[in-house]
Image (tube, rainbow, N blue to C red):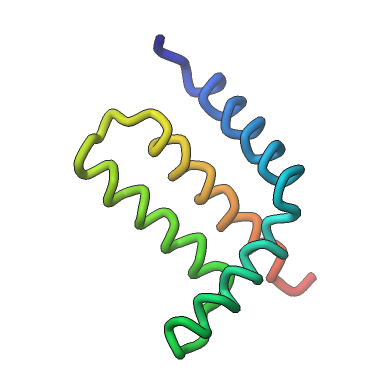
Length: 92
């Protein structure tokens, strides 16, 4: 089943809302992930870098199956989270 762009983004918005209900606000979750990755990697990792790396994971998967709908949606979702993190980090 194919969907148009509006349906695609509506679906992603629903998934992002469900994930936030499940795991909490992206800023908090990605800050927690960044702290864990900082310990593992022995250098400072920022929440925005977590979002970029997650996009990278999905792009690597898509390079093996570029039509995998869930990975395509995940790239868009992580990009939306990155945009949110960047806008929240800007001084008001």
